[in-house]
Amino acid sequence: MIFVAESAKSKIDEIRSSEHMPEDYFVRVSVVSGGCSGLSYKLDFDNESKPNDQVFEDNGVKVVVDLKSFLYLFNTTLEFTGGLDGKGFSFNNPNATRSCGCGESFAV
Image (cartoon, rainbow, N blue to C red; front, side, top):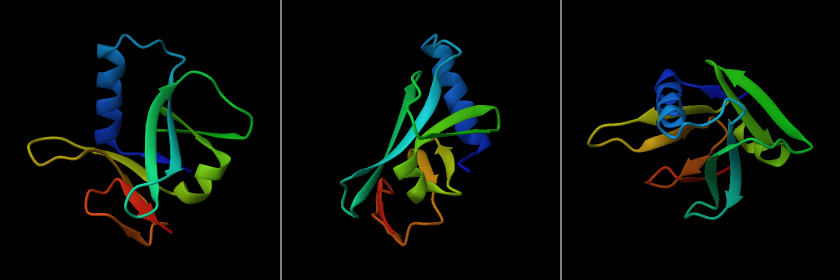
């Protein structure tokens, strides 16, 4: 399962509204090679499902993850922090053994 914190849900709803995004768009989360710790998170809006996608809905937000990425993201919570010292979207990933200072990459 991929969880969506209330803070992330609010920001996702705000982006959808400001971009006039159709209802069939969902949040796609993936893990790609790169970053100072080896793996990086990728977050997009998408409206096309692929074979082997894992589909979750939490807090009213549909989240889709490819199977390979899901192995790294199991039980992760998508969060959003705003304000002057906020990072934007972030991932609270219990599978990460370390992450870089900026929080955008991790290792398992």
